[in-house]
Image 1 (tube, rainbow, N blue to C red):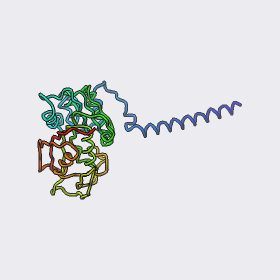
Image 2: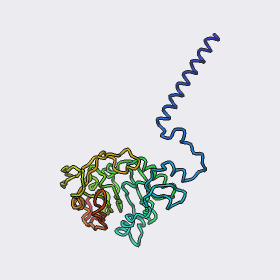
Image 3: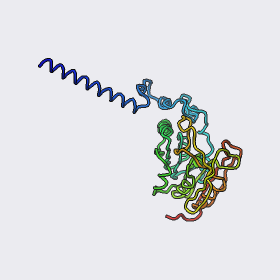
Image 4: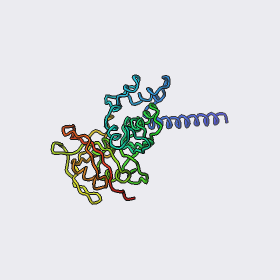
Length: 288
């Protein structure tokens, strides 16, 4: 009996070790940090920012000398101010609801809250960028901003809420189907600030593809992404992106009801293609 008891004990120990090994293997697969997931420094927002050290776009040291970020001064970016100038009052956005597409690292979101927006809903499909937005939300104490992870095209397709303002900065030219995005924007707002690259004859490496959505026809100039796995890739969530010409973009906004367009800024010599920033608003009552 004693030998049988020892054998059973030994067998249980082997089973338990195997189970523990399986659990450890699964934990290592599920955690990108491994044992480094534990922080031993005193608590601070800088610790959270360091999770993505070397992978930030925004120069966060402008906000706090202890915060290590990237090189882009997105905190001083003029494009949120253009939205305030076009659609706000007295340099403010008091009481307004804003839908922000592709917030990247939350700097524009921060600016909108500073300008008094009542609510900012920001939708990001890049998992890493989304997590950075949550870190920024905590570090800067944002109270009226909500970040959602997912495809904003699907949100726009199914949304029943309307927003006072849409902010679409740096997203249209990353879309595989930009007409669908423009249609979605027009579904949920009467006012929109857009900044985007567009196609002209100097842009190389793109294939012309005919496209049509809800009675409007255009040409997409499509190219596949080559670098989606890179840490500095902040493009779209599809394997390719379609550009449109400047005139076709503006025509599409008018077609879907945002018929009054004011060109704010244009750079025909920008890389990797010319850019335009414009405000679009609806002058006729939207169909519900």
